[in-house]
Length: 252
Image 1: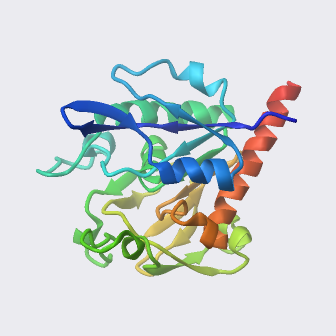
Image 2 (image 1 turned 135 degrees about the vertical axis):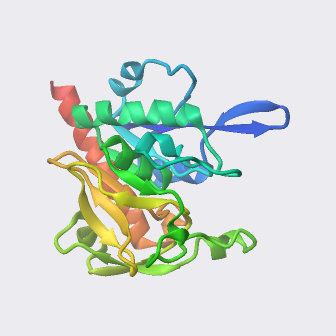
């Protein structure tokens, strides 16, 4: 039996009790294992960073997860931060360095929420630090006092780009998605192409340049993926890309 493709998932730094821990959300690990049918590999993010080459050469895919932290604004000339804005400097340093290397290798990348924003910044784009304060844009944040099923429930529709990757997965031009984010794309990064927009015009998905698989989504397809054919389809497409990459690597 052929070995499963290896998919790297970078960690977040979380305080638990009196100690810092490096963690990855279980929902992402399950989606990688069950929907993409690949082998999840947790990548510890430290400061200073560990050598990325040691990871990337062994991986067949990279999943950039969502997180409770936000990218520090100085990475995209976004001005000063504000009290209470959660940051994870180790993740910023590591992941913003990983992305260009992974893209240059043609490594399949699926980027979700924070990961979506990281790809945009790594490609020279910028973010709205607080989407809800931008005139003309809606409030895309969840209600933190609601149950998780409500927070991650359908929040708004997406208009999918005709003949795009997501339109092919969905088999339609519109889908309903969740909305659990406070930041969003302001200026799209170099080479990235719009895959979907929210009703207020905010970019909610993009794909990368060239033939390599690079898909970024602002929503959370890992949430109850087994109950949502569109969400599950995103991970299946990612898994297929990882298997193609693994096969090509073995032939070279």
